Amino acid sequence: MFRKIKVFIILTTFLLPLFSISCAHARPPKPGPNFVWIAPHTRPNGVVVHGHWRHARPPKPGPHYVWIKPHTKPNGVVIRGHWKHIKPQQALSPKPVRARTPKPGPDFIWAVPVTKPNGVVILGHWKYTGAVKVGKVWIKGHYKANGSWIPGHWKKIGPAPRRGAAWVPGHRNARGHWVPGHWR
Image (cartoon, rainbow, N blue to C red; front, side, top):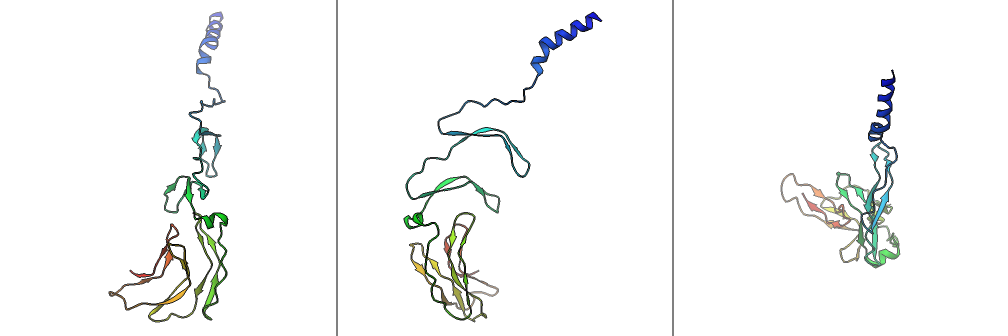
């Protein structure tokens, strides 16, 4: 009996501290001057994120830049946070103010301005809701690459270049650039 107690004391005194696990996690040293500590947390989807050092956002390169937060596009592509250069007039007002142009006709409705998740602002414009006009398509108002405004207008389209071709109306692509209507 005495021998069992002696073995127990030896085990608890010398070996137990070697196998004990601490619940408190020590913060590792800061890897550099431009790093911030991200505290441990659990995301809404249940994923546990351990505490870690993360490189802070780089300094603002100039007055006409805005910070784009890191995000994931619908197709699964992860976009890292970055500074985006904007035109000086956009820097003053994030949503450009423009007077509503006169209604082009009775079969039009006003489409309100929309801000997409990537920060691109689609301005308000007249949208045609009437019957299809054979040989014509409505081109909604849009900005050209040089910043000038092109009001909405009817555009004549010729016959389809090949059988089964479909007309794709003008639209803004994922980067916010205007893509003119074309046959596909």
